Length: 265
Image (cartoon, rainbow, N blue to C red; front, side, top):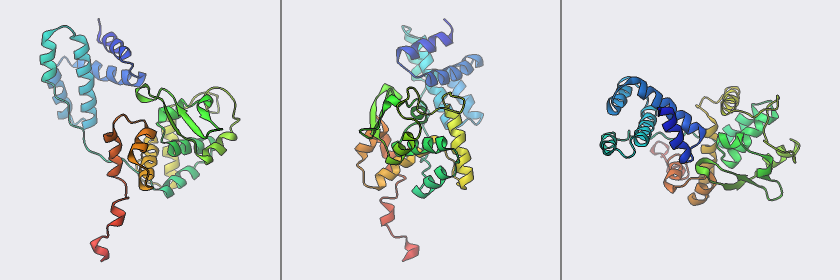
């Protein structure tokens, strides 16, 4: 059985997303083509200057493939034990101020694009959740959005901003299917939304490196700075582990804004 079948079948058994399957196949294809032992392959990536995240992702994919391909083989455990996980760099997320979010949204002349950015920020949605948002998931009566089968196949309920609600009411509410459609009637792709945000950031004169996920990070950080309990933020984001949500304590100014710089004494 080829590596494509092994990886795809195992991913499907575990309920992994198409995006994860594609990423694993990409890394496993390169590993198999190299003809190198797994440890030497990862060392080669490091030696070639690959980013920590690339090496880490490749490591996960190779381990996954070897474990799936080696089921029932005693030697497989020995190989995997000799393949440690590459440590993740501790980068802090980029955060926009509330004023920058306002400038970002206002910079776009397209009402649909403005609404996409507003819903991403106001509800902390992932770009995939924006793309897959359907009218049936928006409860205009209760002012909530039901995010269905998100990452990890988990559902969650998030707030529906009054500004977003007003914008949605202008998009012919009550229709079926996806909320956001292009001028050609198709769904937006994550790449298109990335470009929409990048173009708006350039027009707004924001020099930070912004992605759709930046709006989600900013949502969580601003909630924390406003005094929202970290556990509520975890639930709104759909995190399984509170430790994942705790990264926002490192970028929030909630604590440091109460500390006076010695330069100002």
